[in-house]
Image (cartoon, rainbow, N blue to C red; front, side):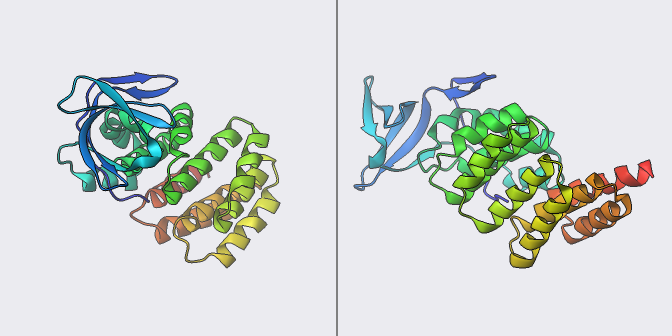
Length: 270
């Protein structure tokens, strides 16, 4: 889903169960007026950044709306390998590689920066690995990004973690915020599934497939969902057939691997 992955040089990482924080990140700060500074990132206060110029010992603040983007320093990294781990549904490997990398940047998701895709990939790895609390903490940070694709991904995960925790009202509130038509249909189907209405959810999923057949963000997720919905209805053979089809169509992706795992588990149980 997100192709640009980097490994970043970090300092002073503090990882806690409630979220992420960091101090003294080396970065280049580019201003909207054309200026550029080498800085240490000290804190994001919401409206302004606390920074220290590279050759200074004094902290200063700058309004966030004056910042064009941040470029946080990092060494070279094999991004292809990390993406390969994700596509193979080896989420633990993705987390091992990116957790120490993405933790420091969480508080800077409201400012365009070169680490947002890595953070988004880590967020998704958490979710698919079953680490709901960490996925939700990451999504809460990422939902303030100016990148609309990443923002939508974060909102989706917030809704899905709410559904998993039984907080249907929270999921419905997030659904009401969304404007992307395919995303709304997908989450509506997931909400109907959570309400134990698999027949209605299947109809919603079919509507998404019919109206957005070329949307490669939501189509794979929806077809995998259909396999699970058939299972919810007790139609195991249909679930296996749909999982097999999804596995074939999306071979080489994490959704293909998830469909394969579902198919194999159902066939074994049969």
